[in-house]
Image (tube, rainbow, N blue to C red; front, side, top):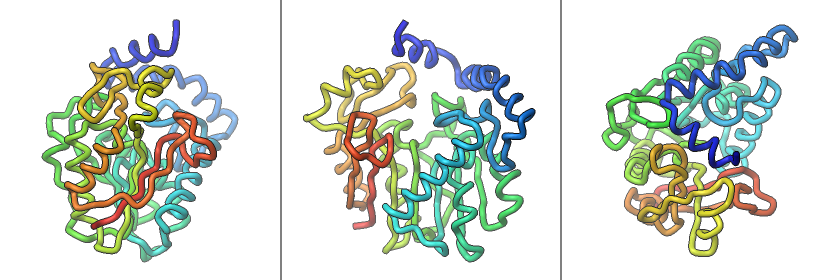
Length: 281
């Protein structure tokens, strides 16, 4: 049985079932970590990690530091910045930011998975009062069955509040109309001289055939995008670069840099997914 079979089986489960499978699968490793004293106060157990690699504390922290370095090098993140983390998850990036951002800085994060937000507020927000995490009950067929739509969601912040806005592996789990709406909200809450970073799976005519057929691929074709699985539309999505530029322009934004990721073989890539840096027009 190949990877595609297991991927289809995984996506055939409900969001709740997928959470429980991860919890039970990693339970022995979590118990062993606890016995060996390999836990970290701010790192959740493996079975609670619902995005990215369910690694132990050491690898989780290494991934967090890597994301911080990306924000510093690609966004010129500074210690006193006001920062918005879209899809803050279970605190992967925030854990390193608590060491880098000053007491004068402000961190806001939001996510559609309540367990992640609760963990972050209990572990990180309690010790660092300038860090705040907000739960937003939006529908996402990968993570929950909430009724509210991402296309109707207004970020709970005033206009021009943030110097830097970022999201890792968020727009890879949303449909095109949802991404377009979020880009407009980013434009609204970001300061005039602010900047933003997001990761995507991107393609164009030169590599569309490749990503349609490779092991980690997107066989289902749409209008300016491709899906990994037609039944779980938030499972993973790839966006055509021309489509991305169109959505950016419609939101009053412009791309300043694209760095291809190593998911499709880019040499010397910094990140698995493609990095996109953008700003207001």
